[in-house]
Image (tube, rainbow, N blue to C red; front, side):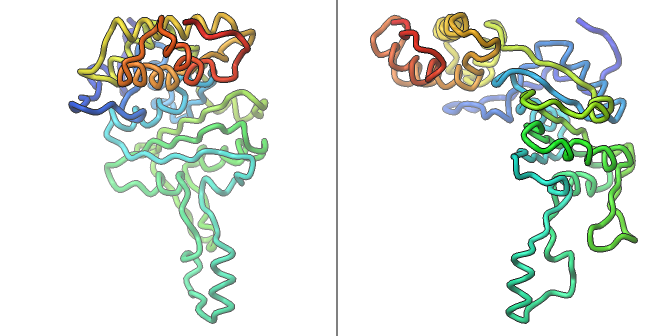
Length: 291
């Protein structure tokens, strides 16, 4: 175990799964890798964003809400698409609404009325004594201008109000948000941006990790024997794939496990062959599911 002074320590923070329900993704993240915890602490202490690489299903998107849950901080998220503009993380201007109001002679004098605050704006406005976690998910989907556009606001912890250059939105360093950025590595990120991030690469989940995740999600419904059987089938599916990290994700594992448990379908039966095909194999390869 790595020993150092932790600002973030996930030990003993597992969710108490209520009887009769499964835990949601934002309630569970198994911090069983000390290196991940250290990376979170480095980002918190340096005030830098934490940039997460890793294959689909490695937990990139669920880390942020679980850090927020454990710390008791507010949580804001934005999923990036090819249409995301740099300012969308700060604000969004509703030009159509303003045009309609103008045509109807109902234009509001306050220009701020037509602006919606983005995740960073809301995080910067945290009340005294409060902090936030911001997730910027799949940043590689956007144009390279978007990562570079973050350097100013995240570096200075401030940005000008869009309709009034004499005013700004800012947050003191002690209340700066913890920003987590994920990428599927589909597009190379700008080097100036990478230099200003704490970077960590998550690997594909192992069998022990999958079993811990299952135990956390299922609570009293957890069946260790069934969980291990399904985990082994995931590993078998991965062996037949040429692309590393392209196998079933943790979420798909949980889907297969929950369906198996609730339907009474177990590995080794004809029904399991169908369940495995629709939850784990899907269209990843042409191999026949294992009966």
